[in-house]
Image (tube, rainbow, N blue to C red; front, side, top):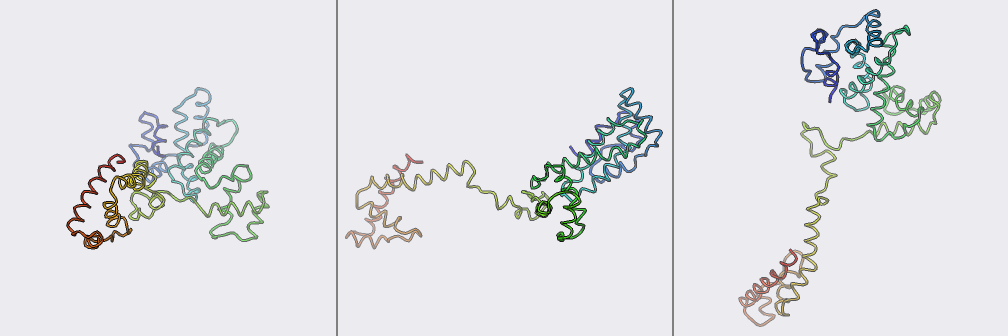
Length: 299
């Protein structure tokens, strides 16, 4: 589910929802952002009136209007987390979940606008999503480490690496060890690498999946390799054992003497055994036929 489809579940079926700007299916994230930016904002009086309807009468239509009018806030906040390499649509979707939680818990009698209250919930959901999807950042388990994770990028700015003074300053501000700042920066700089290339990438064969995958580990290939090994050891030895000495000598000299296949010629073996080259060929053919029958048991 993408951000657009997640939000469509919140829309009321009435014509009033269409008047808010959603007149059909949103095909991509740009269309979604354009649509939510056209949604009208609520005044404080309208906002509090809707919040009271939700609180007092559990009016879901009021909740939907509150959510729809604040979707642009989620888009704006999610944009600030694009540097973590996660899809903008996924960040928006998680932020929308935080917005829904905020609307459910919002108390209009506190005298604050929903936008101020919702920021915390939106960021909290996005933070959780990022931490779950950054496998390299397992260090971010304590509150201080999580704070370090989400403040490191903004603190270092556009610099490739942090200076010693910046490291010491951030460690002091966030009450963590300078070694932890260095380790977190290393983890963030390393980044995760997609195992497979995008489908529209012409250089797909250069993705890690191309050189990490191995057909040798595929089950049928493993079985075939084992069978081949058995044929070349047990099977071949058993087949040779069924031959007489002369036939075995001819087969070994012709086919097994050298790995490159450059065995003895028929004429060389004819001289060795004092027979014609044609006779050597006949003995060889009969021996190979006999061996083929013996090897069948190992196929």
